[in-house]
Length: 538
Image (cartoon, rainbow, N blue to C red; front, side, top):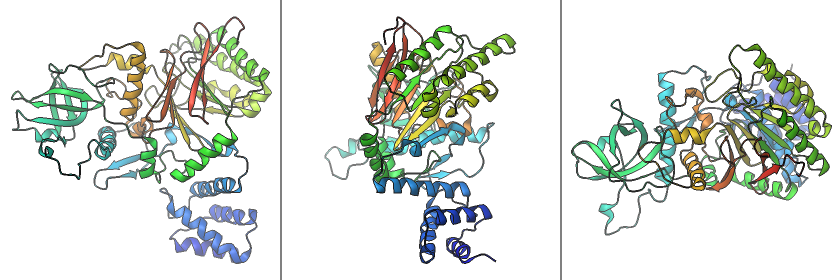
């Protein structure tokens, strides 16, 4: 026979059509005992837990212990803020592997996101490949239709009949000589012609009358807004082409704040603002160091890391997070070459010994390893699995706060979301430009890359024929809602800039004329370039 407390718990959850297994029942009992809830308040307290559980998008009829734990953690975080205690960033810090992120598909029928319930696979199918592209198109399209420049005006205007509205390719037929505004994906036809493709069809593009495109990089696979005249030759003679407008994180969160895109619990804008204020007040000096191309097989790398750690200890400034991005080998590892594989593992073992020699780092700092294009992982296409665990055994044993990240991976800290992506993206984008190639300065090129990636709401706005991706995990490359910060770790030159409220930076290669990396400050949402010279001058 269940005791009165257990009966009360079962009764309340049954009211919300949920059943409790032994583990979930025991967990709720532990919560009540931990907070010393009196008997006359048990039902009221359980009622709150059951209600909050029922609000979760992944709530199941049989209560999930994982979801229940998340509900309780959210309650604890709220209590911490309500009590006005000093904010503990550790309780608001999450590391999200790409392969743990839930898939949310866009439903055109409901004009809303729907969570995919079936387990995701790495193989995919023709349907899932099409679904991934449709998701990208529809997610961007719904932001376009909500944008002030594209929403139909409610005020009557003399030239209202001449205003352009978004059309589909199927509306072009039989309407030669008329001007249209289309939205779709840039691609190549079987004949090698550049086309604009949407859900209803495709139209060939004629760039001969285009003087200058809007800012950004236009590649095969990116989505574009195109304005032009439909001709008798069934082509669209374009007069303007641009990337879709970017929607701010605040705007997206105000609409979809209830959706748990990361799988770590959704937060409202009010909760985010509260956490942001506490972070600025309590942790103004909290830092995240990001290093890229950390070649562990190069002797200067260990010298540079040692110098970095020494400087931190001398200045009594220990970063909360250190992100080490690949490639972790300067030359890569030839398949089946046992000597190179041994050298590759030796690099990680040396890193383990180095970190372990600084106890203050092993106690306080989280280390995140993100593989590069040439590192040894289970799969070679995006998103990439973490570095194979057999190479990192010594690191795991000596560094307690080690996290083997996927590529890309995400970090959630209080109200912020940081995306870490290691890819030589600039070169890849420039190699695959279509239609128009901008003649711009280097600084403009960096800005164009950032604008293109954020406007496309995707880390790899290219076709799968150029860069293969796992179709059922394509959502892990999405940048919607816009993150707080994006690390585009690239062997290209360092840069940092903020676009539509999202801070984007590239730490560049750690080795060069000096030891270079970036330091991100969550309190001000900005990064700075850091350099340690070879000559001993910090």
